[in-house]
Length: 271
Image (cartoon, rainbow, N blue to C red; front, side, top):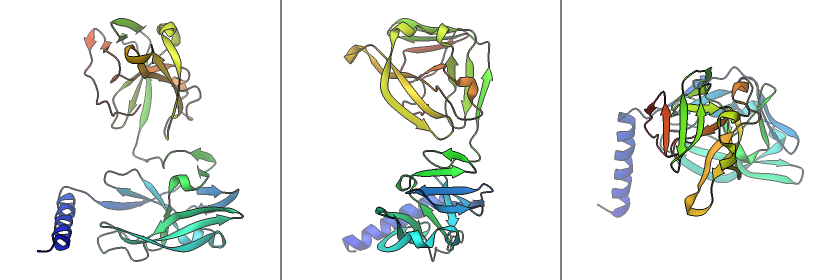
């Protein structure tokens, strides 16, 4: 067996194993008006988008090609192949003197096991300027309609320890429960030893919660970078966490709730 043939066989076996373990692609209607802007123009304006859900990936908007400004896109010679969807064609977006190369892809002839997305295209999120659901901007990636974020008032006793010192002690936390994420404890600043924290230059953005600014403790090897964060102006519906401080449980020494030390979450967990 040649090296090339062996490689194809191994790839086919890997794909078969993924499918056997539940890997899949499906679509669902998206009832929201979806718009994408580039160079001041609405490249897409549709109420007929679908969500494409693919195992291990965030959702993707697929929009009818008929709802894309045909006068502002150009087909390219670039192609790629997905074993679960087929051969992809690409388009660039051109507005005036601005060009976003290969910003759009679509599957004119998806494989048989893929839902019929032949009349739809998708965009690389960061190759256009802005996305909107109805009149609210969406950041990072489309919001998964099955992803929940709940914030509940609580009277649980939360203590945070870093470097042997207790840096937070609160009996009025707000607990944030988010799908597939560890529980986060948002604490009033009066219950945090803010003298130990210093503002970090790090800024992260969550599609569900908004823009977070981070805090560090100490410097160098003795310090802990980005140990906590604050949403000064969280996304609509999450105002209850505004200006509160949450700690990265995976970076602190101990989190104690009602006298019980909590297990440490995976260090890769998102806030």
